[in-house]
Every structure is written in structure tokens, then in C-alpha cells.
Image (tube, rainbow, N blue to C red; front, side, top):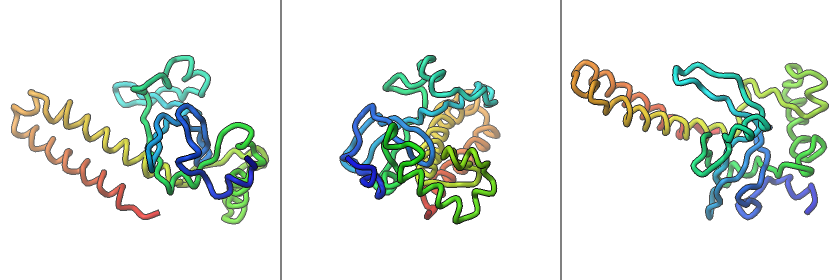
Length: 194
């Protein structure tokens, strides 16, 4: 296989469970392969949250791997679904994904064309490390949709249906409004056209 192959991205046939790939300057590990979609977990870093909702220090891949964050299924991190359109932005990790690969070259060219290089240091441009501030790639929509769905389900199952909430009409009404707002957010995420 040549590096030119990945100029058009990947297809379902290019994936297998356990393989790592790049998408949007992030490293992912394939966890399932379907007929038209794949599922993957992000493995370049983990940003754990405390139960209070406050973030903990971000773990690099090696640290997260050692702590078992990527053991599964089920996984301690969110599995994200990539459809055929998302796969077009993917390329295999490893030697195919070096900073001289077509995908990284496309990102560098794109950054230079749009002026994004002004926000990147020369080292970041040379090393192919992207500044993703304000940048959106196809996987973000799926990630946002997946997280909104999971958060909504957790809210309904663990808060809205909690006996303390259900037995108090004022709290039940407020929880219902939150439920409706979360459902609206989930729907709105999927209506965004990229």
C-alpha cells in the first residue's frame, strides 16, 4: 500500500478492531467494524472528570493505557461512531501517518491557505502538530452527539427518575424542562450541516 492511497481517506474495508488511525489530528483505536460505520475510542489522551464535574489533569496515551482507560468493552471512554463521510478524513497511524504523509501535508497546506498558521508556532507547523482551537472536523459532530445522548440518558435515569425528584412537583417540573432542553440539544447537533 502506498501513501497516495490515503489521499482520499479510508473506507470501512480499511479498518479492523484494534487498529489505530488518525482523524482531525487525534489518534483513535477501532473498537468495532460494521457494514457502513466503525466505532472507535480516542487514545491520544484522556481528559477525566471528577464526579463534581471539575476536570482532572489530562492523561497522555501511555499513562491512560497504564491505568486501564482503554480496556474493554465496555470502555471507560466514549466510543464514537465514524460514518463513511467521517472516514474520508482518516488515515492509518504509524508510518503512514508521519508528518510527511499526505494527510498531514493537506492539513499543513490548509492551515497555510486559511492563515491558521499565524496561530501556530513554526515548530507546530514543522512537526505537524495542529492548533485545533476553533477548528471543527467531522468526528466532533459525532462525538458531541454521542456525548449529548449519553448525558441525556444519564440525566433521565439517575436524576429525573430519582424518587426524591419524582416526589416533588417543583423539582419534577424543572427536571422535565432540563430533559426537554437536552433532547433539543441532541436533535440540534445532528441537524448541523458541515
